[in-house]
Image (cartoon, rainbow, N blue to C red; front, side):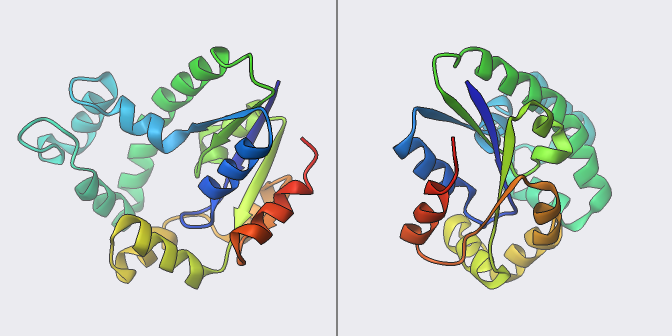
Length: 192
């Protein structure tokens, strides 16, 4: 079994790259963002730790996490983003480790994580694929995917690592500025 990290900033194309790898290999994806969403459901220890850090007004009246409010907070304040990351990494890494242990029947496990390096998950990967793209393209993708303004998409990208960071830290760099077919061609060059 190989564990492969797939990382990059928002809108770079991590999810599409993972889908292509799964389509062509005996692979399964662990999406760190999805893990975080599941762990932040009402009444969980993770959500309680977020409330402890950010206050009761970070949840709706029904007790669900107000993701949009939290996102706005962390993309505008570096200290709050660091605070959330500290809170998040322990829970997410533990849950991802559990998932990996339950997937030992797969040849490849992909960890789709924008904060792969910051969380330390890169240390359990056989190698890391870094997906990069042109900023204008990323902004467009984020706006369409998340239904947010261009200004909010730019704030989000400004709070994340640059393409240079991913080029320096990834083992394999894929520049996703073209079509899905061309992305697939680039991924097919990788020896899994």
